[in-house]
Image (cartoon, rainbow, N blue to C red; front, side, top):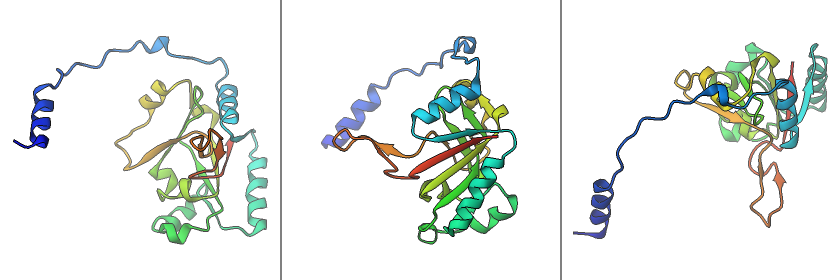
Length: 191
């Protein structure tokens, strides 16, 4: 018998018994008195720029500013533009400077925002752009990940992702590098 077969037989023979997941008392999960404030503070700590407003004027100014710079941008906040970007490849999107996307849900405990394939139109967009701008309704912020998973429908779309802050790594000489393998910056508008 080969070593590989011996290992596979040993693994098969020593499988632990399946046990049911424990029932959780979600009333004991973390709660916050001010969801928006907690959410924004966590995002700021992770390197994101955050803006809270009722009017959306700052967001409009942001979009106009990027347009005036003449950089390649995609605005998925407007439903008309979604289909235009669905089929583009990574090489066609390599010059993407700024992408505007609406999040479905935000989590106060860790600043994560759920974006499904439906919101992003093309799976590459939140990862290939240089600057990611996410818009979130404050009514869509929940306390914790338990509540988030109760609300999202993971089987509804083919793909979804939680995003919390710009990309970063601290592997190299223990230095924090922001924008290492994804968006270099993240701006979040809670409107």
